[in-house]
Image 1 (cartoon, rainbow, N blue to C red):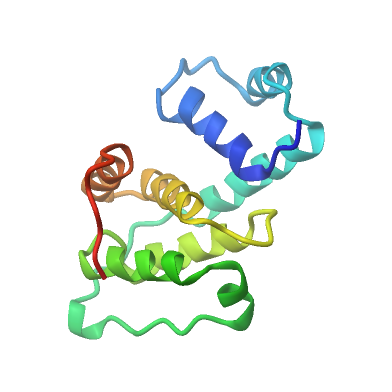
Image 2 (image 1 turned 30 degrees about the horizontal axis):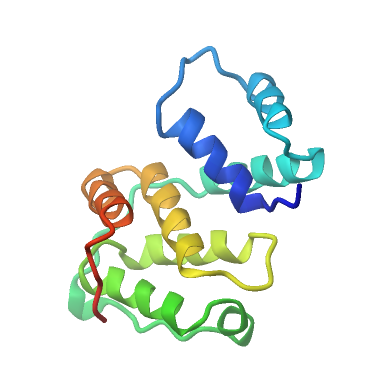
Length: 158
């Protein structure tokens, strides 16, 4: 089975974090579950490192008004891994105030930490959802993003 870090993260998110599994679920039991699902030790370790880095960056965002919001210039590496659709979607999320500059940078940091050369729009959506879930004060934005992801009739414009 060829898997990547995002698939492991999505499995964890859907089965443990999102469903708010029992408090008794510890890393060892999650690792056992991931092994049973067919994920390799290397990918499991990378996914837990990714989550640890996300948890280390958890903080309450400072409010920034729309007129103070800086324009994001993507680096060559970011542009190579994030196509126009991904960057356009990130801009859309900023314009509708789902992502503030702090969350945007966290999303970009976590996207660049993924183990893949190219990142698709669905990958961006999942990472945005995970970042918003992890950040205090982002409950409404998380709910909005969740609705966007799971309602196939919604289209975005940027």
